[in-house]
Image (tube, rainbow, N blue to C red):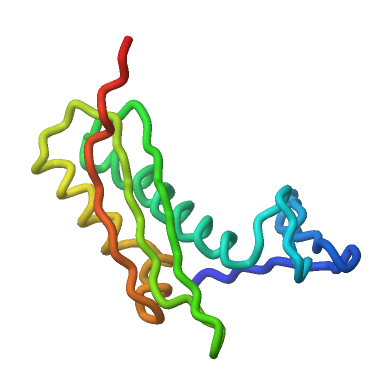
Length: 138
């Protein structure tokens, strides 16, 4: 069993300092919002994306899966009453020469072994796809 801890300290009516280990950042806790920080819903989406990326980093060496890069786009919908997320969608773009079958295997592993994504998927529909990143002009 692993345990995690984060400390949130109110700075003022506009932001909260989040700390964990030797890392820190300011979160948007201003009711009016602020453009220079993640709000709680965005932090949730970021946590799911980070979980997926961590899973990719964990499984690619085991699968012998070669990639040059990964980008994950997350989108969430929130209802107002009661306030909650009603869906989370993702798109994982992998820059790789691996086969489509191997991409599907990578996606299966990401979906199966993500601590945060598995937890969130129990509470809200979590839907998405993993695809080959479009080729860039070079």
